[in-house]
Structure formats: structure tokens, C-alpha cells
Length: 177
Image 1 (spheres, rainbow, N blue to C red):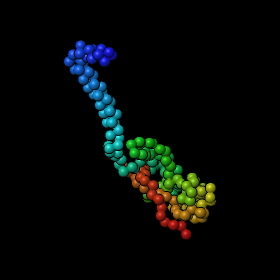
Image 2: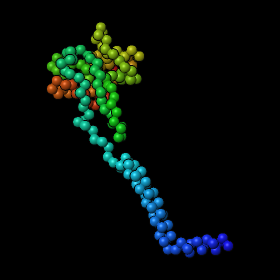
Image 3: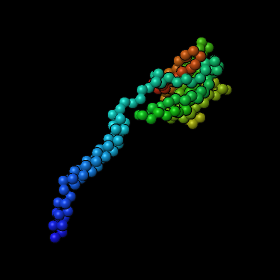
Image 4: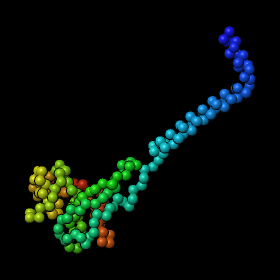
């Protein structure tokens, strides 16, 4: 008897009920499609898009040449942007910079080549000193004593106008004896 009542309800509804039901189903599927497209488009751009381009060979302004005394190491602090995939971070970096009398510049990385400890310049001795493992480096970055296996690493450096620009850090390959 329940089947007969159900069948009679559908017969009374007529053909317009099938059109309404079809419209509702099509509307639901359309909404699902729009939601899927809205979620998939950013994911596709993230996964298939290109990385941001790097700017001007990664040279950063580290300081003013007129503020650097000749033949005296100065520790400069500068900001550098690092790109990790699509994420760009600004990091604080340091370099030991020595300006020669003819405005040539050498910039050393801030870590000892033994275990990466921070070193400093000892004015009295006229040498770079790593306090952790007693490595000593000359003013030109060569190893004088200690367990350090190679000279200090150097930044690419160039002078543009009166500004000191630093590039990437070059790992020294020369072995000390």
C-alpha cells in the first residue's frame, strides 16, 4: 500500500517535478564545480607557476666607501633578501671589509673556516682571531695557526660610485699547509 501511495504522489507531480529535480541537481553539481575550480586554480598556479626572478645578480649595498678607513678591518652589517622558493626573507648579514689605499676592497665572510664560529679582529695583534679553537688569520685572510683548514671565505665585492656592493659568498678552496 505504501508503494501505491508513493506512485500516486509521483503521478500527481507530473512532468514539471522532473524538470525541477534536474535543475536542483545541475545547480548542486555546478556549485561543486565552482568550488573545485576556486580551490584548484591557486594550487595550480603555485605548483606550475614560475619562481620570482632574482634582481640585479643579488648585489646588495653594504656600506659607504668614505666611511671605511684604509688598511683597517671593519665589520659591516647589511641586509640581504633570500628567496626560498616563493618566499622572500630579509636577513641581517655581516662581513669584515678591508679597503686598501687604492680603493680596492676585500670582504670576508664572518665565519671561521674550521667549524663556522664567529671570529673577530684583534687590533693589538693585527690578526683575525677565532676564540673557540684558536685559529689565527692574517689581514689578507690566510691561515696563520690553528685547526682551520683553509683561508677565510670572501664575498664578491665591487665599488659603484661611493657605495660598496657585495655579491655572493665564495668558498675558498685553497688548503693551508
